[in-house]
Length: 305
Image: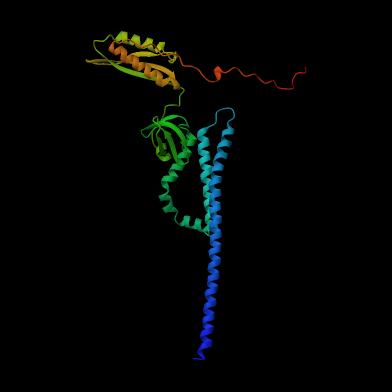
C-alpha cells in the first residue's frame, strides 16, 4: 500500500490538472462566444437601423431626381425597399461571420443546394422579377385606382415582393407581384378623362324621343360634363317588351363618379316620368387659383435709392 500511494497521488494530480485545463478552455470558449453573441446582436441592431436609414435616404434621393415634376412615389417605394433588403442581407452575412460561420462555407452550401433552394424560393424570386418588370413597364403608379385579380382599390405601395392596395372601404389588400404581373390589370386612373355610360330600359309605350332629349339636356346642364367630346344619346337595343337607351358623357377623372351618379338619377326619373331635381352646382375650385399671385423675384442687384 505504501508503494501505491505515490502513484495514486500522481495520477490524481494529473487528472485534476487535465480537468482544470479543460475548465479553463471551456471558460475561455464560453467567454469568446458570449462576446461574439453580444457583438452579433449589436451588428444586427445596427443592420436594422441602417436598413431603415438607407430606405429613407434612397427615397429622398429619388425624390430629388425629378425636380421639374412631382416625385415618382412608385420608384421611391421600390428603390427604398431594394436598399432596405440589400442592407439586411449584408448585415446577416456579417452576423453569421461574427458567430463563426464563414462566408465561403455559406457560399459552398448554397452552391451545393442551389437547385433545392431555387425550387423552394421560386415563388419569392418570381415576385422579385415581377416587381422589376412592373417598375419598368409601369402599368400603374402609387395613387392609381386599379382592378387586379378581382380586387379594386388605390395603389399604396409597390414593394420588392408585393403590391399593396387600399379598397374604398379601407381594407388593406396585399397581392404578390408575380400574381399581379401575370393577371389582367385595369387602371382606371391612367387617362385624365373618362366616359360615363348610363343605360336604361324603357317600356315600349314610353316616349323614347322625350327621354333622349331629357337625357341630352341633363348632360349639357351639368357643369362637370365636358363639352368636347359632346355628350351623345342613342338607342342601343329594342325588343317587343322594352327599348334600351344610353347616354354617354365625358368628364375629368375626379368628376367621373359624380357625373355618372347624376346621369343615373336623371335616367331613372325620366323613365318613371318624374320631375328632375335641379342640376348640380359647379365644382368649387380650391388651391393655387384662390391664392394671390406671388411676386416675381428680381434677379441681379437691388436698384439704388
